[in-house]
Length: 236
View 1 (cartoon, rainbow, N blue to C red):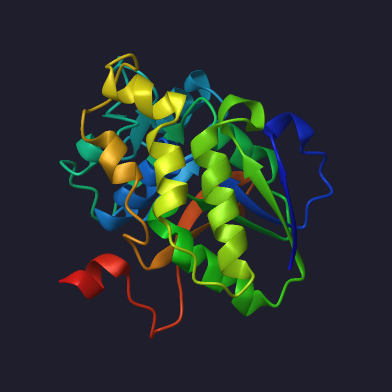
View 2: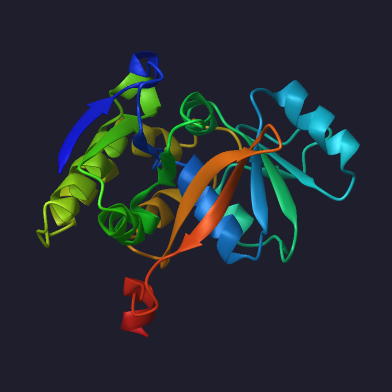
């Protein structure tokens, strides 16, 4: 399968099959939100839009990067999202990089959002579609984020039919500036355990597909083949 990796500034609207990657933390947080029972995640362009959407849907929950703020119910932390009861709920997500990248490609033929937590399931979806090319969008640092590039390369190896050792890719992510910032408490709205959760490979057996629904960008879980079992489940 042919592949290329771009940053958000290089997205030009010609992408047909896309994987938008945000390891730390948007699409690790989103995966945990679905695990906690969220029905869907609506992606907002900015905080004002997130609050406006919430105002029109009082039962929905708004999530943002950084520290908590008036009107927002959740922060972009996979560890803190574990404490939320999201069964059947809709979450409105706005983050600095991940949601921006997803919105940039939402009209693609197939757009998936990924992190290490859903890497295997994401690769299975792409393989099952029979596509012959894919664009990876590394959202952090305008395409230079070490953790997103590592995840893109890991996915590329999976798509090539290999069974790569995830260790070297996780090491690159674990030693990235983003991981260092999170561990050092330099990102507000974070939890010390966020980094380790972002480094779990195949924690979940679903991919995450984004598309337009009545003009709104919506992220939903996409279950893979029935015989697919997550690494975490196999370890139990």
